[in-house]
Length: 213
DNA sequence: GTATGGATGTTCT
DNA sequence: GAACATCCATACT
Image (cartoon, rainbow, N blue to C red; front, top):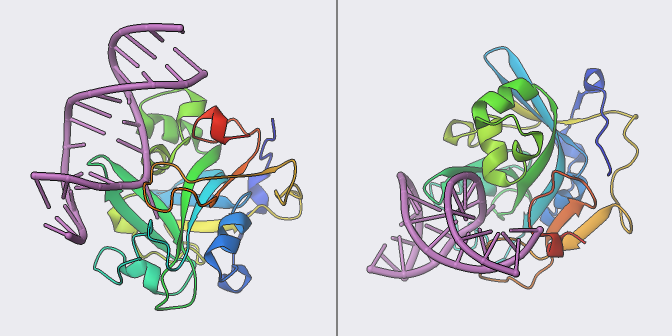
């Protein structure tokens, strides 16, 4: 199993300039990066192991029909949070992409828990490690991510930000062994497009086994 | 391990 | 009224 194996002390905030502009490139780039959530003096972190791209002109994307009050974050600068509520139960965390007014986002689908695991266990009401952040709804609940964080800048240290683990993590998935690619989960439109990216073999990746080869 | 269906609230037709 | 970027409990192999 590939483990994140990150040293928390070396966290460095990601600068907007180093984020790829294109949605699909960003979805791949974010694998291996760290989500940092700070609430009430508590820090929870996890390594991104699964993403989905919702690029411009994608009929499955919330931005497809243009700007609405809900999706406005995706029409702003990249590197911000787009958080929305769905299925009556769950919040989803996305990282905005593209240049302003275009519309693009990357759904964060799974994390490998790193720091603050006891708090995630409390938030999720389970001690089972593998169930804490495997899936977009679960990870949002574990990290206490809700609508209040919609629009937050992920490139400045605040309640929610993105980090690099520093030079110690050299095993960023590129192709072949570590980078898995599949169709996206739970959509009906454009369901043939292979825009889901994941760390192959990682225990915290969601979805059916058949998609995770 | 896989398959199914219900719960739930917001958005859009 | 339908669809929805999901999760959970339950039933079954």
